[in-house]
Length: 258
Image 1 (tube, rainbow, N blue to C red):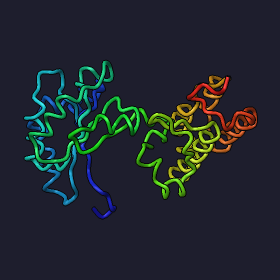
Image 2: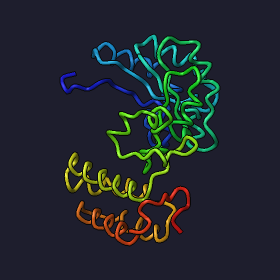
Image 3: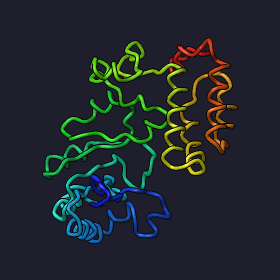
């Protein structure tokens, strides 16, 4: 509380084998009493809201409604449910059917997660739920959070570099220049936040996610994944900008750069 933290979110959904073997993450879907006790102890120890992120079940043999009711009774104030079992990990497709049913049975907010491609897709899937959570779709694509609501908000457009003409059929397609500018901003902010050494190493996995759908992209990705300084990262970004100067307003995701 003294660190101005907004809340505590407990991960009870991670399917990684080493996490499950150690009794953490999605293994708590099986060890229900331990899961409830964790939330109970946290709720008694702090005034901060406690939330839980979990999955439909561990292997299809657990009852999601009973589990979340137990979390609610123990003190959880919100749950986020990923639409797969732990056994599925990230295979197959996320299914929100049981999550919609869950919402009718409990009194706390429910957020859905899994295979949500962008804001527009999320608004179609949210139905009776209280919100959506996007993870993998946002890697190298911060524009995934833009929907009709934002693109038609004149104040939002004044404050951001977003271009209305790049929003097509519910999806924002950034120009190459927008992508490169976002990469620069991301790299600078990460180094500013975490320091030169840690920030420069951590930014590697993020920068490569931005680059897709134009010639020579594999070479640039290979170089970015081994960058070891902000100076080097920015040099590669500037090199791309120079080499593709005539294509900066083109949109890679629409195949406009050949």
